[in-house]
Image 1 (cartoon, chains in turn cyan, green):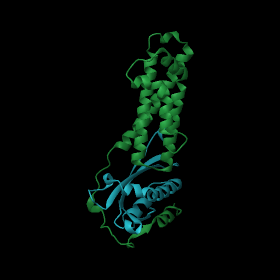
Image 2 (cartoon, each protein chain N blue to C red; image 1 turned 180 degrees about the horizontal axis):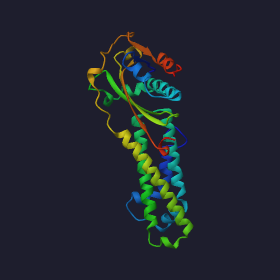
Image 3 (tube, rainbow over the protein chains, first blue to last red; image 1 turned 135 degrees about the vertical axis):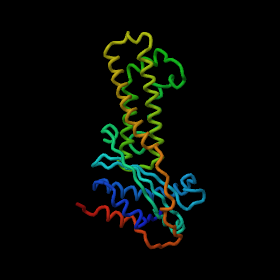
Image 4 (cartoon, chains in turn purple, yellow; image 1 turned 90 degrees about the horizontal axis):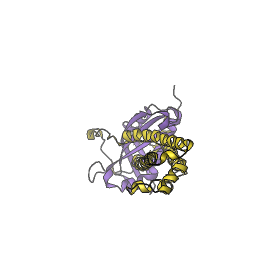
Length: 107
Length: 164
């Protein structure tokens, strides 16, 4: 099933917009958002991702590297599938952790 | 792994060099000779897998998937380190020429560097994130259309806007 991903306009969008990313890093972030839609079907079927048993919210963590700054970014998304019957998934919350690694790791 | 190597091909490629370690026995003379002569092969395979892992992170990868691959890489790397170290201290190791011993030491050094890089990354990835403050989560909507959300395309346009 191909899902249409939406982002909470006042919680998620400003947070992502405010991340310290280069232009290439922001392009990487867009790629991550598109990947979420691609793999959502399997994430939805994994009960261990649910915030609480039976919750309509599940958690997905995604790692990507900003090629300009070499920083590694770990994003944690909380996604609701309450409207999944319409093919819509909504990202309700996101947080991020950054790590800078030596060249041996990041290059 | 999405790149040139797969976990199975790497595992298969290093197996002849570490099988005896995994069977908790000393190497036969032929197995020890193989390590001394061809130590560069498993190191090359592990470095290729590491390069693929880094490329996956460049592209973006789901957390559990990358942690699993890195865990396998760390485990295979450790087996090679144990095997190389064991061969280095084998009785009769001194009979081999200096150049061969030097090569084995050099390959072992590459494996230790790789272990350091992989373990620091794994340590970061395995650290538990802080708990989510559930009170910050909005009320979910079951409707097809719900105000207060934007599409990925709109988000992409924002992110690609030139900024100072």
